[in-house]
Length: 303
Image (cartoon, rainbow, N blue to C red; front, side, top):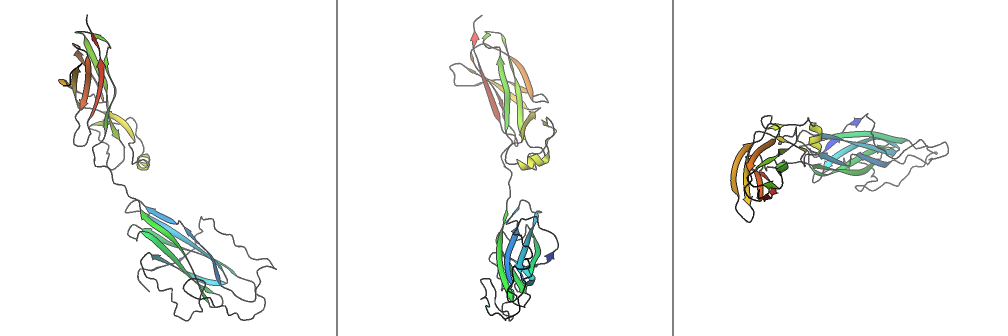
């Protein structure tokens, strides 16, 4: 037999899978001349194994039910691997599966009450096991020595996630230049908050206390479940912000000043309003923080 085949050992555990119910036949039911070994069902749970990490594994359970059987063996065969049929050439009398012809010859015998059979098998699938379709091949032996066959299947796949390589997103919140309108020559207040997209506990969007102050501590489990999305926005402190001004009717921004965000991500500064136009703040970004901008138009009126 090929070494790729793994014969499952009988498990005493009870499967949490709803399968067909088989009860002992009543005193006047199910009688026939003699043993008629059959596999009545093969229940595989789960029918799809999804592994997310290299250290993940999952146990596939198989329940074999039948009638007039005394034992069974299960073979787990990955797609593309050869299976020799569980020993077809050893003098068996055929079977109910696609690999043998059923022996219809019956030996006359007194009225016989069938024997119901049920056994559990299992195999643990790990990251190194083959992905794709797996066959579950069952060989069972009847109480009369005949061999019967059955088959089912399940699927194995790897579901991996690669963290994005781009810098963490940032944004300005509540940027405001006030008052609006303002008299010419008066001071304008520029204020707002700088935030960073953060997922605490994730292996890429790491918690960095030197720059990011978290508003609470979201659990790592929540981050894991929503790892394709930003978990939330958090204050981004101690970052330089450039202040620019675009006069009305112009297409060229003028640099005004550079300020720094407070530990909670807020910023505040005052500028002199001389002309109507758009005030902007810009965070240039860093190697691992994306840049962002915000704007606010202010009308300047004469005194």
